[in-house]
Length: 278
Image (cartoon, rainbow, N blue to C red; front, side, top):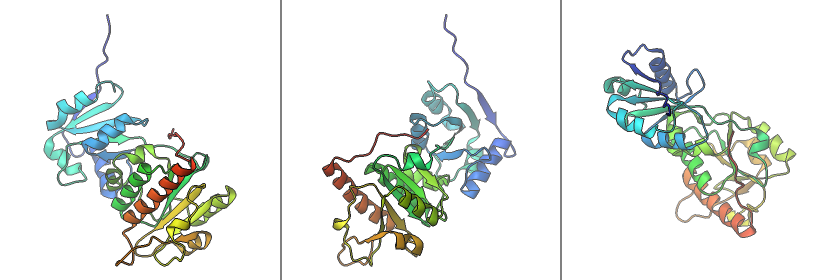
């Protein structure tokens, strides 16, 4: 006779409950919880987290979502489920029209050797502070076969709930490192013999002339300030030819450059290595 273990379920009613306070603190500060867990809010991120290789520690769901969430958690018996009153959930949600579910997820781990292995196509984001742009670029990078992401110091954090939502689950899968200084990235590029390109509306070299099929790092800067001088000096500038407008939004620029890199690498036989984060 088989034995089915009961899922750990708790019902939280007080806003002073330690879990509720921890989640609210993380959402307010656009950061991870005290245990270092990401707050992934929305049904899509909940599903993406369960489908990933990452550990989902706890799911917090509004009472109205209980049956639906329990059904989705079948086969994931090690995940703790916490049910809260709908009004209380609204107080901890990061969006005004919340879908009533959030997952607390252990973030992926990645080191520099893993990030740059093989023939890398790494995207480095330099002081891009808008989490929506950061998440969108990460999603675009995965779509076009980038092998990794570097979120340089001053860039919106991966743990920011807005970054996670905009990435649509890509941050669960695409290897990334955050908090590096520009000088640290430059040292890694030189040590590993990689090419480095920086997108700039003032560059002379058009995108079509870049050797994007080689192991390389593509640096994208903020729309207000561009790429910082140290990185710009270490990189070859690239210009995206445009008509009528001087420059593109950084997310749009990323899509154009990464599409071209994907096209070149496919033509040369270089494609993304099948890799995952531990």
